[in-house]
Length: 124
Image (tube, rainbow, N blue to C red; front, top):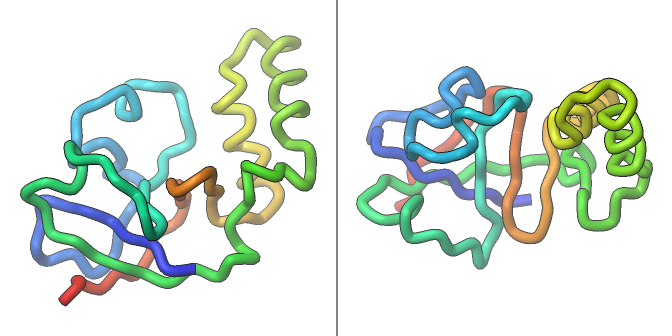
């Protein structure tokens, strides 16, 4: 699975989840969530992310990234049940379940969120 990341920095070799939200100010930075780096799949378009930035690419093993669209393990319903019981955020519970299932991240439509450092290469 080839994924793309955009950064203001021209010297990245590895993305790091602890820097989540430092590139673009938005809801992701403030929301309760598992720290992660966002990538786009081919066809991803978001001008606020892609404009005036350096583009990188990386390859992830498709089997290591959870498919949220098909949700084969039923993690969405499990997360919603946990959140209803505990009063927490369902997305946060979902992300914890993904990590607990030994995936490095998840994807939906054309966006990938990865919870581990990823080695990237500058796109030529």
